[in-house]
Length: 309
Length: 200
Image (tube, rainbow over all chains, first blue to last red):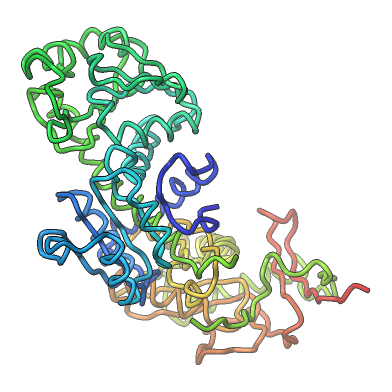
């Protein structure tokens, strides 16, 4: 049960039942989004701090709206305006936030493991909103919630994760989640973007997009993270678009329909064709709506009184 | 945060206390007659089935609400809208329990603005559930009235709340549990009083 966890640091530490508990709890929160007053009092009196050390618009906004719709008091702490820019350490920043009696801290940071570090040093619960190239658990949860809506279940699905796998925390959290729930995962991308020893995670690796897509039910299309690449991994964007981009002609060759997910922001014409982006806009925007519901579910499930040791 | 002692019996109550049936206070026929009277009273007091929304509180209030809607259809030949409320997110003890209760969806199929919303629950006890339900209903709009129908009123109110329509008043002690059983989930209709007994 999620109540047994102090913090949500990654999908890798969750049991399949806990993942399903979050996904099931997200369903009634989807209904709350449709009300005229989209607010429930479940987190009244709790203070949630959004601590973002990396640029983020959609994840931060999604967490903020989820917190506000649960009636929490929200404080946004962004790096450019805080004393971190003046040289403060993460631990000192965290302890200062804690001194304000925050109940939960939602953190995004450029370094893998930073949420684990924070969790060890504060009493507040920590929710990982993306740590380096490690994990982005709520993104994987909202992807799964959208897949369940579109295809009914996760178990037995064949899902392709396509793109810059090595630099992607979204790919990593998705691989953990989908394999835990019994989906068959193929990761696909240029060889320079595939990490080593993928089979240890229980997924297949491929560099052939057409072959990977052939019997798949869904594809999760990732953005190329140029900001995380220290040296060029592909000859050119045009070449990437031609061989690895999801284009309508690649989808037209498939015998069955395909659910196309994209965590955003999209680079149309690079990893996803303009026509594909248009045709699947409904699903991709549904991911954004489901993101709010899934984050409300996580915040709600973690908001109980402190776990007694 | 101060820990308060819950008045309701937690599901994981200590094993040395067991629930023993003490009395059967309503039979299936008694329940049928009480539900029939409640349905007549609701229609009579509101002055017809128009503008009425019956809202059952999960989970057993939902079964009672379905019965009332069915009865009103028999009496007036009008199917009044049926809503289902899940009040979990409005509970006043969420900050004190370690394990958050399971949330289910609330389904109100029509606008409640300027309508008579009749909340329906199986047992009225502390009144805390009804407080939560009223707060939730108001978040859906401004109803003309909110009224309350219950099958059993067992007393021990902790809030200034009373029911407009009562199937049966049953004086109880706080050591007792009133259980309304519905054929849909329990196999047969009946109302029983159970009591905690210390096992030696």
